[in-house]
Length: 478
Image (tube, rainbow, N blue to C red; front, side):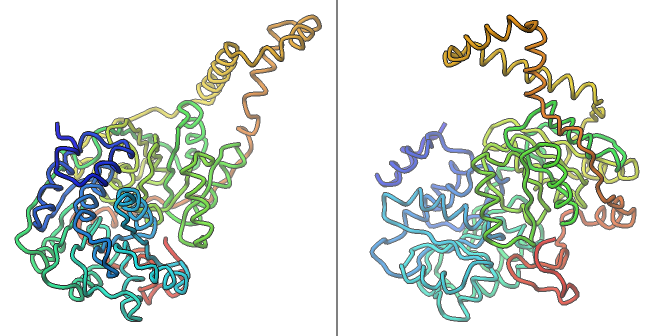
């Protein structure tokens, strides 16, 4: 066991870790922090949710001179959501040292960002596209950067950012310290490290299974037209704290969240056609728990780092094993249990077997729940709520009225009526979704040949700006 106060950190950072509830280091923190403090370049292979932001953030903040007006730390992240989350954690860690991190990403007003940069932040957390826009405008200068972090490097590879990363690294002083963190280390990432890092130390926290070990994984074999009712029954039988539901397309995501709303679930959608203000609102509601279910496309959900996601539902099976790993990695984090359930049509069973082969994990079958089973679960949950409330003191205000009601009606009838009121009638609202074609066998054969190689160009969106001329009509993530 390793504790933060044993790492030789300054008092302000020790205080920050205590207030954040950090005591014992995670494996990636235990290995990375001493190496980074010793000025070594580091490659860290670890899944999201293992504490890697603190692993690079704590030693980076220790190296920064708060009196300097220059940018000294640079974190490059694949998505705007991850950039915001990393900046928030760095600001929390650095608040007692007086160090400020600023997120820079596309979709936000450029003038507003330039104004914020005049506040002289010591650390920038940026997506590649918007960072390069600022570099061209000379509103961000990297000549004094001492530490560069490439966070979720494999995601940046998949989104076609490697060329941009190389351009950025060439603009940073060669005597910098370079840190790279990635869930997987494919050949292009290895080449990047060889060209731009100095004798890096390699740390691997990857478990024997590629997927998150704390996440129970199941699949339900179901016809396309049965998927939605199956999802609703599972939500009723196992109410999530927070749930992510993945759909293959923006149309699917919109239809799903609207249908869930008609059935009485608190759901919202996340995809690239949303305005930045709407995206921020959706994420704020999900973090607070106002929204219990977030329906999202793959790319829009990349980089999400939200605690408390108990369930992930793959309403549409992902197109490749890598996407599967990233999807279910949203739950089962930092030792907490998680549940991932994939809906697979009979024609897609080959894809599921391929995912099992690549992730080295057996995904267990689960039967399609019946309407009676779901209804029984709803009734039992409602009954539990009534029994729990019956033991609370504030029901004394209602006892007199209850006595009057019992005089005129049978007690069993009154409890039955209470159960009915607690169970939402909208669960039976009719819903019809546009059917999605199953993944083709041709696509499966292509993915089987190269399960973790770059898919440059897929989706027609390059992080926070358009890049594929063949997709001129695209207005955002797919």
